[in-house]
Length: 364
Image 1 (cartoon, helix red, strand yellow):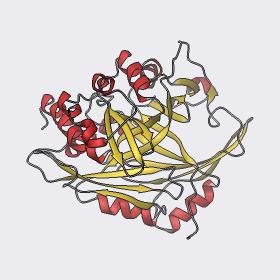
Image 2 (cartoon, rainbow, N blue to C red):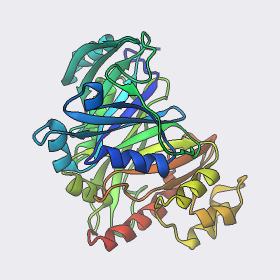
Image 3 (tube, rainbow, N blue to C red):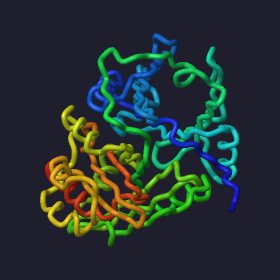
């Protein structure tokens, strides 16, 4: 067994650069049940930005807005709209992670840096990945604070009710036509990931559009990154629509894991989160397709939850509509009952659903 040169403990956080972090934070608290745990901004000595750290289970998202018209954050938002800037990885040794990946061809974003305050120190370093996205290595074994130095503890001023989200299951990137294999190779060569699964346009296509997808995973399987690229179809695929509106490659969706998808989705729907619509005929032969499941089909149908099975078990999943005005980033809610896969059997139903939304936007 080859030595894992980049051991990862999991996803440390996901940082969105957004137009209005204060209002975005309100949305994620009220609709999604994330607790506000920390804040950085002018009141904490940070002059150029405001950042809100939200947590549910082990999922941490940061929402950051610029306070300056010419900053990198502002430029990112002008180009991409609200989007994911940082996929941060929790490591035991940030410096080693940085130099190991650099020696294998990574492009540096931030040299190893020590951040410290009265709660100890955190070491960070970061490298570029697809588009304007970066991977930040976060080493926090010598830190007792709420999040990172520079952030102060904060608390939601409203009553926040979690919806049962536990961990980040996987994060999906959309890249330009012809770039998927290059980025898969980057994860294999530079970060030591393994290719887990491949889907081609025979697996993932409708009458109109198709995509290719490869899933890479780190050694312990805690971090999984599917990478999508468009494939030729009669009309514009959802990946092309994303790239057109995001103006480049970027994070398409973040899948968050729950132990009770029916409860999670019921709560999210009641709070106004919009999900893709799945037609009723999807459920007609569901049991023939996936075999016996514990859930009631009528409940799944009412909540529009999709089901797929692999050799290890089955999974339940559902996708939100984009969570900002551009048809770019969205979330997946997933519950795994043994299945290790990504819902290949649902791709066609899912795509047809996405195409209905694209047609409404005039982008098909």
